[in-house]
Length: 324
Image 1 (tube, one colour):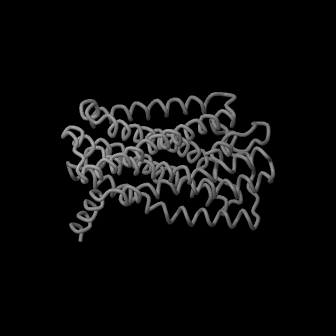
Image 2 (cartoon, helix red, strand yellow):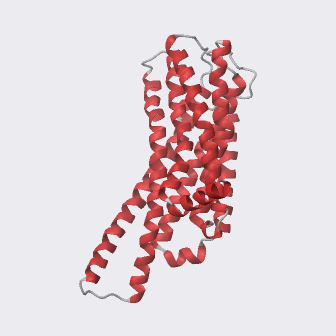
Image 3 (cartoon, rainbow, N blue to C red):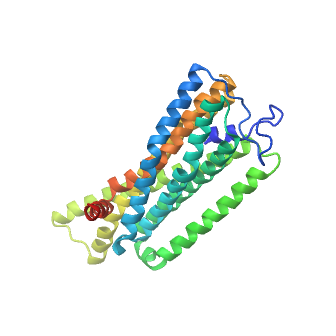
């Protein structure tokens, strides 16, 4: 995400490019070289091809879940919010990125408006994705380790309300930060780093606890089959907790996919700080590639939902059968 932030916020005294916009965007002029042209064409073609897949796949997830009452669970509701952020990326951020990159080929420059739309929406949507993943992970932890309280306290309506409130607060917060005079790259880097690190730590903690529970349950079941008895209440609790671990692993898959897609950007931030390359290469070769990796996450997410959920796969198959 630093590539987005670094391309959006640089010192105002470096150039006057795009100075008519309400906030500072990429101030490095585009220079048509073999490297920049190749990167521009590659990013346009790749994102142009993945964009329709992202739209269709996430829409299919929405339809598959909403068409069946039994799929409208708390967990799937959270998944739909994550799919909503991916739809925002595919409908606004990714097209703006393609237009921004494509404008370089036509004008040997770039569209300030397209870049402004891209940098604004992708940072907001990436933050929403991370916050939603944190919520999904915590919801899974609560469902596994406090099943009775979970059934009593956690409802679809409360989940929708809480996520919507978090989303609104994030959008307001980031908007205030972006339009505040004197906002620097360091400020946004700190915000992004805190979100990413929090998501990773929570996921690792929950996944570790879940794996310990799975191992303990397997040993208990093995002992039970060997003649060791257990109370019906304990048996019921263990049987409930085992299926929940699959959805917790899905949350881990989603977080892992996000981290992998953000990893090139995190590495690039070190390149930016070290200043080991020129600005043209940094802004028009390295950043477009790392931003493409970020956008790829919205394409991967729906395939993870389908791969990890038999019920969603079954619902999608029924959709295709009816349409055929």
